[in-house]
Image 1 (tube, rainbow over the protein chains, first blue to last red):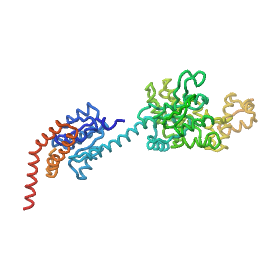
Image 2 (image 1 turned 30 degrees about the vertical axis):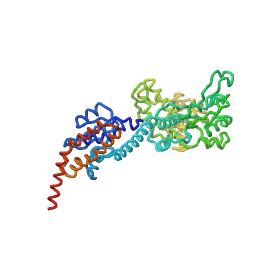
Image 3 (image 1 turned 180 degrees about the horizontal axis):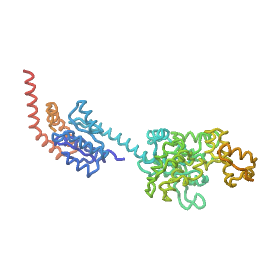
Image 4 (image 1 turned 90 degrees about the vertical axis):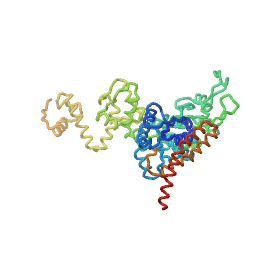
Length: 459
Length: 67
C-alpha cells in the first residue's frame, strides 16, 4: 500500500499565489506536479499516474474544474475540489457534479490539508483492503461476507485466529489474505499442514534442530516457530495433531519461547498464529482428542468459512472467476440444464471440487459442456467423500422421495423397471415377468394402466 | 479564477490569500527554502495591485451603503 510521503499529487490552480500556497502545504506528502489550465491538467492525467488531485473549480474564468475532476475520477484518483465558495449550495453542487472525494476551502491552511490527507489515507486503506479481499474471494453470500467483514476489523490485531471450514472452502487462502492485509506481501508467511505427517516431522518442522541433535542432523535447521518471527505461522488441520505434539507446542504458543531439538537455549519468537481445521474442534475437545487449554489459546478470533452448498448464490460468480483464471483464457458457456445440475449438487469438495471440474472442461477444450460431460456422481448428487453409502438409492433419489412421497416414488420406480425390462425382452410379457420375478398379470396390469398401449400376451 | 462578481470572494482570493501566503513563507523558511520564500514574496507583490483594487471597490461600496 502506498504510504503518505510517496504519493503522486497533481495540483491544478490558475492563481500562482494560491498554487504556491497549496503546493507548500502539500510538501512532504509526496511528489507534486502543477498545472494551470484544463489542457495542461488533461495532458498530465493522460500521461502520468496520480494518487491525489487538488483541483480548483474556476480556472481562468471557466468552471473547468468539473471537467478535470471527471477525468481524475475516471482514473480512480482521489480528488479534492479547491474553492473559495463556502456556502452549502456550492459545496453540494461540487460534490454532485464532480463526484469528488473532498472539498477544500481556499485559501487553505496546514490543518485543513492534514484533515484531507487523513481522510484520503483512511479511504485509501479501505479501498486497498477491499481490493485485496476481492482478489482472493468472490462472493455475494451474506455468510462469507460476514466472515470477511470480521477479517477487515482484525487483520492487524495480534490475537490468534482459528479458521473452521470444510475441505476446499479456502482456509489457506483466508490465512494468506489475513497475512497479506497485515504485512502487505507474502514474506514471512509460513504454513504447515499437520495432517498425515508424523510427530517427529512436525516437531522438526516447527522447532528446528541443532547440528548433531540426532543421527542425520548434519546442520542446524531453523524451525517454523523461529522463521515466523515477525510474521505469520499457519497451522492447517491442527486438530489431527497427536496429544504428545499438542503438549509440546502449547508452551511455544503461549510464551512465544521454545527450544530447538538438541538445544538448551530458549529462543523467543513473536509470530501471529493462525490455526485451521476441517472438523469441529470443540467436538474434538469434548471427545478428549484435543486439549481444551490449547483450543482456548488458538481460538482468539473464530472465523467460519461457509461450505459451497451454503453459498450456492456464488456458484455462477465462481465459475466465471475460475474460467477467467484458466491459462487457456477460453470462454465457458453453461446452458440452463448444466447449471441446474451444478446448482443442485452439494459440492462436498467445495470450491476446490468446482475448480477441478471447470478446469477439466477447459483443459479438454470444452467451452460449452453438455450434461454427458458432467460426472455421474454430480448428476446424482452423490457425495463421493461420504463414508455412509446408500445400498440402493442415490442422494438425488432421497430428494425425489421427499418431494413426491414414498408411494408415488415406488410406483414410478416399479413402472420404470417393468418398462425397461419389457423393452429388453422385446416386448414379451412372460420373459419380462420372469426377469422381474413377478406374475405376468402384474406386468400386464402395470403397462396397461400406465401407458395405455394394448399388449398381447406373448409366451 | 476571478470570474465571480461577488466582492466577498474577490477579497478572499486577493487579500486573504496574501495573508495565508505568509504561512507558506514561514513553512519554507523553516525548511531553509530561501529561494521558495523569495518566490512567494514575488507572487505577493504581483498580487498586491489586484488586492488594492479590490479593497478600493469594497471600500467605495461600503461608503455608498453608509451614505
